[in-house]
Image (cartoon, rainbow, N blue to C red; front, side, top):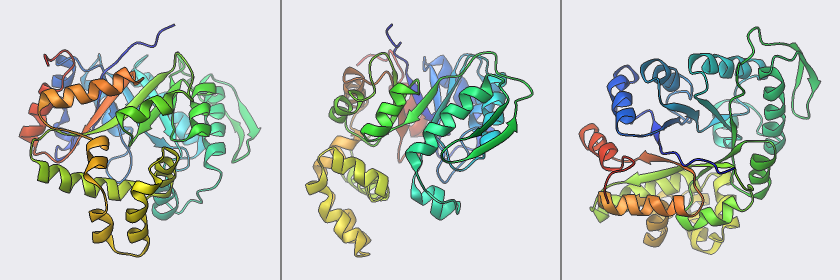
Length: 323
């Protein structure tokens, strides 16, 4: 079996009200994008943008990249997934992950304990619950007593696991239907996908800043990298990828409370690796390297643009656009 190549985009679009997304979704579908993938951090929740897309665009596949396994109770998560499966039959994919200690513990007051086991247990629970089974079980990280969905799903949605290092990547291949990867270079993809296994979907959220303005790229890129790669789970990921020496000055300055020095310590070469930038043709070529190295579903996340430029970028990066 060969996993089909798809081409998504990250939603919601920055600076655009959810109320105004209909025309954007319709254009995305008309341009040939196959998927929209929602993110959940400090903006909208993951499901509302997709529920709107389900009603407005009958062809797009809808995916979460990602829903934290910690921040919804087991039954609530199962009900939400089942509702999305009803809203978009055969078109919904659940991306599930640990998230981070920042979101889970600092923002939501939930202990960030045994993240690997929590994701594994949630997958196992969902497969039973979505199939209509009555679930009474003591999982390692939570318990469920007598829960049954009133309306089981007609078709089990793909469950993809947000994964960084080998343990979670193997979980994505063994118990999930694929992996969702994030904050890595095109060359890093080869290292990561080898742990997932064959014939699995690999969704990548790739940060794109389509401009020739090198100063803007450096400014936006450094801020984004500093915000993410100082989070412990991402720091550990990049240390595993072999960037410990490159990132050590940033980490040291960040721990000392010197945010300006931490940001300045990020080398230009790392920005070039982790942020897709340049002309439309250069961006398309860079994105193609991710696909060549094993990404089956790119989901670009467009950074730092006003709405007019953002819309033009959607057109410039659309699948099938000439290089």
